[in-house]
Length: 127
Image (cartoon, rainbow, N blue to C red; front, side, top):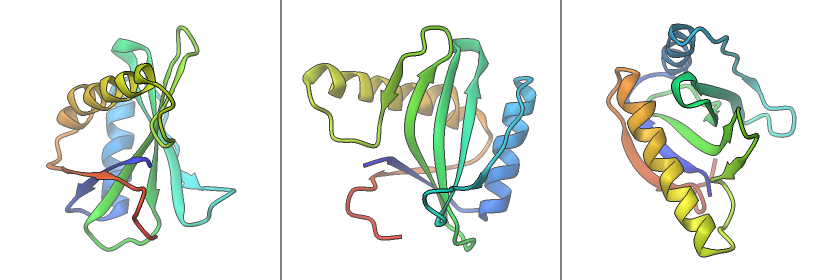
């Protein structure tokens, strides 16, 4: 149920752009093929100003458009994790998830310099 965002560039270009964004925030960036799922690059995007780490996946197929999947948000200060890729169990989880997705769009996606389209969640998507 991860939230999907689509970019009209290759996966390599998207990974480079995210790496540059993280470097601008004085943070390292690493994307690697998932150990549990070889169909995705696993990585993160740092929001240094707000102490958040956005955990993301990028499907391995390299032809555009490229999807970026938001799976969770971790607050580095409190250690609290807001899952985005699971079915919410309460109204509070629904609210927290909406806030996390909105913050991700405003704080990260709108600032990395690429046009994107929010395509919903990945619940019914086949990779």
